Image (tube, rainbow, N blue to C red; front, top):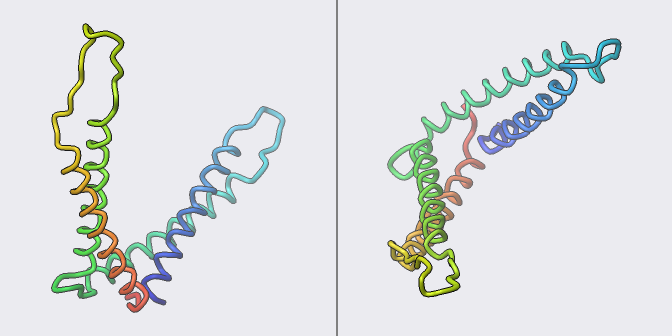
Length: 150
């Protein structure tokens, strides 16, 4: 199985787990004398199987990422860098947005708000982080589709 296939399976299993969690919550408490819509014991059993599947996939994915070379480091290092770039872009964008919110004044006596940061510079930083993220993510996706899961 390719790494990309394992990632897709993990995502699908996590989606199924979230759906099961909702179904289980709906069946966990009923009015006295009624029957649950679904058997909670069967749902719990299915949850346990899915948790085991997810754990196995995550272990294999992490092991593969840690052993797959990527530009002088590992795929794990590249993923950490990609995550940092995404977080940086979000922070720069949010701060720039906060600094540009207009506070309309109705008279000269009302408080005037002024930005304390260089909005254009923050937007440039966000754009740079976005560009680096996209380039790195493309390379990671290429490796995911050519690497066998360990």
